[in-house]
Amino acid sequence: QVQLVESGGGLVQAGGSLRLSCVASGSMFSSNVMAWYRQAPGEQRDLVAGITSGGSTNYADSVKGRFAISRDNAKNTVYLQMNSLKPEDTAVYYCRAITARGTNYWGQGTQVTVSS
Image (cartoon, one colour):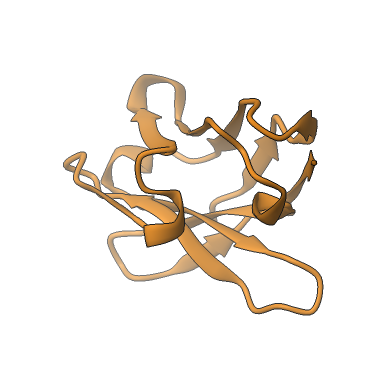
């Protein structure tokens, strides 16, 4: 069982920055694929960024060049650095873990609101 706890959300003006953190329980964090998703009201939950156990990353086109995902295996933590935020980045951001066995876990989400 993996538990994920996100933090770092909040209200920020357009052009500002936030860093989200997701702390995972369990001893196999380094072998997990980790990802950030977001869901705006009335919209589906979409992938924002992902990072493999080897450190390879991928991003949604809408955030390339502005967001950066990283992980610290010693701290069981994955981060999402968000720069040059736009009002359209407003959403609940969720952390997802995919274990080596293919099991999925989700965090409870953290709200990010970008004002214009």
